[in-house]
Image (cartoon, rainbow over all chains, first blue to last red; front, side, top):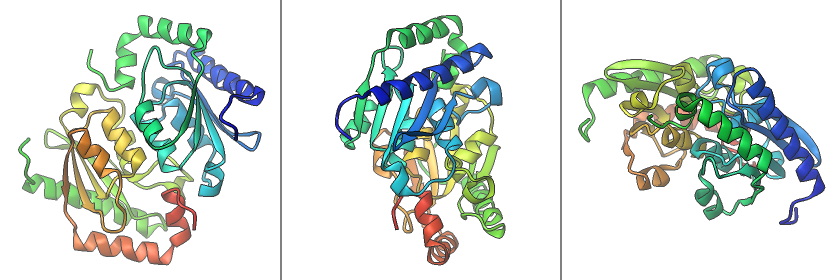
Length: 155
Length: 155
């Protein structure tokens, strides 16, 4: 994989964004994710805090969970797409499975553990996608309590 | 919380160990965990790779998930008990929710992200519990393929 963004990346990123919108439409936290490998989507998902009462299923975790059990030699060829900079937990999941590359919609509304990921050699691409930034900013304005719960912050 | 182990800690650790044994008895990976706060167990669980086909529900994740949605001011008073040194993902979950203290059964069969946790100020207690070490060592000897899958390692 070259250290550049491809048209395929942008197509898969759009799927992650559509996952975020799926969550938003049913009152959930609008963060979406896709795990892809060798040109195919293996798993897709979105934040399930509201829908499933889940503290663990952030979007990235939901996408990786929905991909099912995979051996290490698949993860090492994957790219993880996510609409928001991955928190410590989701970053840790990428590190556990040695997913080498993450395409991130934006890190303006939340800065995750990017420094730690970079220090471990992961390739990160930050899109700063305008639609994604606006979607997340509006959600945080409207539902600050829910948002703070999701990132483990007090109000 | 004093920086020492209490009788309550040992009682809660035993529950984490019993969770690991529950998993072992049904052919699962024998790692168990308990999340406790103010003298009460809020969530308990064990590795669900085999039982639920889950790549995300390591023991610690299962325990935190089973505790349900909690606000930040609860997590900050919790202790997480786990039979095995927490991997990057589980360490990341503890960091996300600012769980300040982890009691770990052993780190001889697997060394997780303890250095990163310590660098972030978490209080770690490593028991090096003989029964836990033997249980895990036997499992790894018997099912190396399953074990490698769980920690994202190639064989």
